[in-house]
Image 1 (cartoon, rainbow, N blue to C red):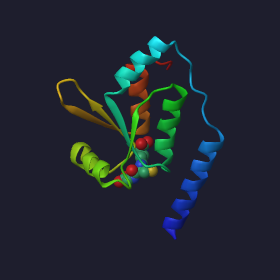
Image 2 (tube, rainbow, N blue to C red; image 1 turned 60 degrees about the horizontal axis):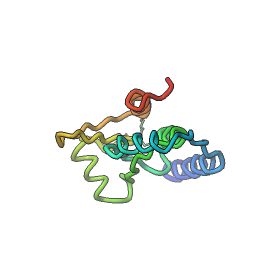
Image 3 (spheres, rainbow, N blue to C red; image 1 turned 90 degrees about the vertical axis):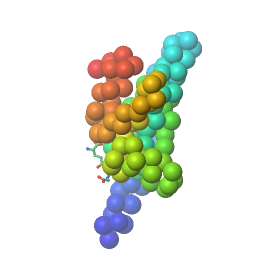
Image 4 (tube, helix red, strand yellow; image 1 turned 45 degrees about the horizontal axis):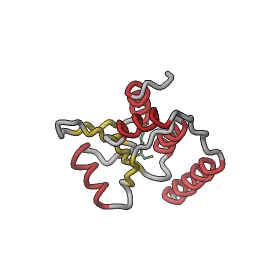
Length: 124
Ligand SMILES: N[C@@H](CCC(=O)N[C@@H](CS)C(=O)NCC(=O)O)C(=O)O
């Protein structure tokens, strides 16, 4: 029963998200390219119908941040990566690949959005 309620809520969230897509900011191509290069170090582990993940995805869409989405629910490999790297099967989680090869795993939707605002100099 709880599963059914959760599933139904998920559908409602996905429908609302689909019906009200955020308008992405427009940048000069070279500015967008710089953002894309920086964003290539990041990936978002998420579930499609998780409201906290929708919140982060909509923030990314509004700010035209091209961050790879990794479904940590259905695809075993991404779920395993998240549990191994982040130590918890909780989403959303932003994986930050540092140049030296070490990774940081950032949980909590608000903390992820704050990090993206800081890193990409986006309006607070
Ligand atoms: N406060 C967290 C809530 C995240 C959350 O509850 N995510 C759920 C999916 S919607 C989850 O991963 N649950 C699994 C768990 O907590 O182990 C945030 O804002 O990111």
